[in-house]
Length: 89
Image (cartoon, rainbow, N blue to C red; front, top):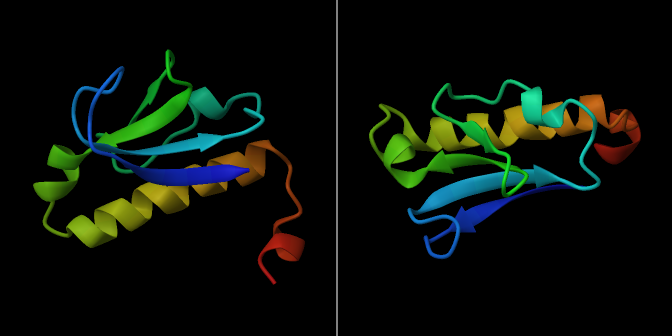
């Protein structure tokens, strides 16, 4: 499963951020390259984060957020060896 969403900030994630995780976590996912470059993998949470501030200050916030979602989905599907053609019909 690949999941993305928005967290307003509290608990372990103090600032508002978009997140992306895969379950079960495919081997190598934490080392995958997520876009944009300001996205990072939080080992404690086991997911990629992209802060609201990073998105807000980009020339194309919508495009930046889409890129984050797409790049982490692609990493999860590739590393998880999913049958993407069947999933994306």
